[in-house]
Image (cartoon, rainbow, N blue to C red; front, top):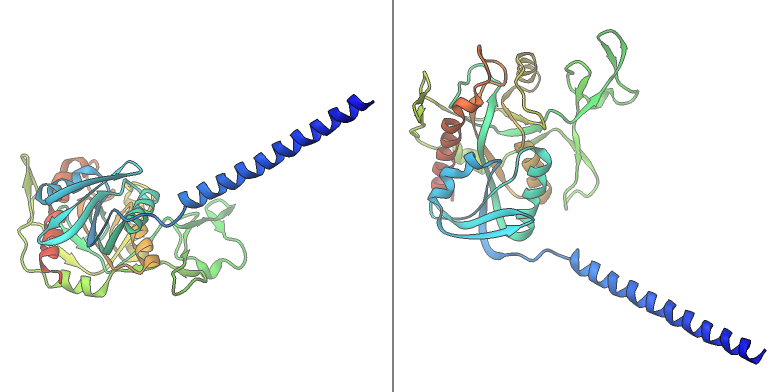
Amino acid sequence: MHDLFCLRRVLRSRLAAFFIAGLLALGLAGCATSSAVGTPVRLDDTPRIAVISAFEPELTLLLRQLQTPARHRINGVEFSTGTLQGKPVVLFLSGISMVNASMNTQLVLDRFNVQAIVFSGIAGGVDPSLHIGDVSVPAQWGQYLEVLMARETAPGRYTIPPRMEAQTLAPFGMLHPRPVETRTAASPAPVRKFWFAVDPRMLETARGLGSIALESCKAGVCLTHRPQLRVGGNGVSGQAFVDNAAFREYTFKTFGANVLDMETAAVGMVAYSNNVPYIAFRSLSDLAGGGEGANEMVTFMGIAADNSAKVLLAFLAAWK
């Protein structure tokens, strides 16, 4: 009996020790987690302009001109600091499409002292008056694929749920575009927005750019016209590569868009939420399904990427 009593005391002591050890382990894990998710450490404190492109061909010309480059890698993304046109910059690839653009724009804001954002890249032309190789600098950007997919209640007839009518724009079949909710430090309550305006002062600087010698030929591929710079108007973005004439026409009619792409509106939304000025330079590589033959992007991508980069460089030289 005495042995049984002693055994029980030993077991109780050991259980208590295991319990305390478990609590300590949880506490230490909690401390480690808190440290890991704390305020991100900046890689340098130099005030910089973030220069973003979606994929490598869009950034090639800019990287070649980067002075005193230094490389940093975060989450697999390479950030190159240095100067362009005498301005301190950080260059990087956002990756293609909206989630990549949002995620990595926030990443650069968290890890560098970013004072402004500029985007350079290619786009699909929507405005029929624009041509391949032209560079568009829209005044605002919206997300055309932030949509409600309506119920088909009869062949070709779609009905959206009650109390949602006021939130939608003109539809394309079952697709009803609508604003997206966003917050800022100044406005923590959700605000529904469709358009994210670029910085007015940056836009005025773009309007004031003089004549820029844009490329019309590269690697034996030539355009039939001399590319032009168009400042102002609208741009739209979404997570789809568009090569459809009917949707192109709808996009121009509904949003008055000059161009569409897969990143800029996402960057604009992140810039808005962080109160950081932004602007985007997009050169037409194709007509988003509006051309007479096959899609033109692969053929004219090099010309378009270089033209966008040339306008961005002229902008940086003029920006004060």
